[in-house]
Amino acid sequence: RNRRLVAIAEAYGLRPTIFLCTQIVGTQRGFWFYAMPLDEVEALKRLPWAELQKRLVRDWSFEVTQEGSDRSPEALSREDLDAIADRVDFGSHTRFHPILPGCDEATLETEVAVSKREVEALTGRACDHFAYPNGNFGEREVEAVRRAGYRSARSIEVGWTRPGSDPYRLKITGVSDDASVDTMVAQLSGIPGWLRSLRPGPRSGDPLPKTERPGC
View 1 (tube, one colour):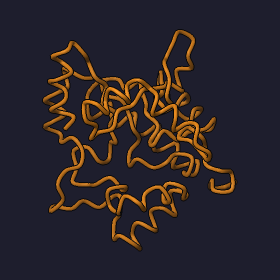
View 2 (cartoon, rainbow, N blue to C red; view 1 turned 90 degrees about the vertical axis):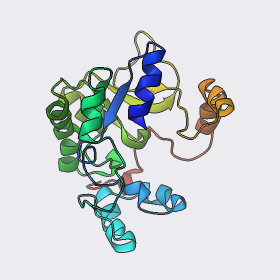
View 3 (tube, one colour; view 1 turned 45 degrees about the vertical axis):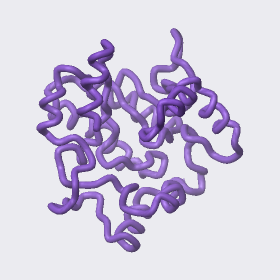
């Protein structure tokens, strides 16, 4: 899908940035959140990453590192990367798309810093930009991104980026993958995202509660 969208962006004079999960692109691995019914995903996002992986194996026989020859690719292939390389910029979206506040320190470092080097190896270009999986981050995650040498990081918090905005907490106006034209127009207004931000409970961009974070 991303490869097809590049031509549309190009037609409007846009140069998109695609954030890569480096251990999923160019492989027959899948994204963990596609391994289960949609209504199960939100609850698992709240688990520490190590516990989440155990549940994936136990309940859905899914391992994040396992490749399946019968699985349709869920990310760009190496051929796709080569075909669009001159028309897009590439950033990092971690290696396996864990929810970062649920990772221990070593895993956080690997997912953030090693994925940067892997993007550079895949593309032959510097990787300067990062996107937080699911939009979840806290001060610890911001510091890990800064320490790894990225110039910016994108959240999914609704808003506008202005001069003086924190480059490691960039805001967006998001659009659903399956949005109709009418839905897209509404979402680009920012109103649906703003209304979601008013709901009680944790928001994307908030760290997990301290009791759910490994080592805390």
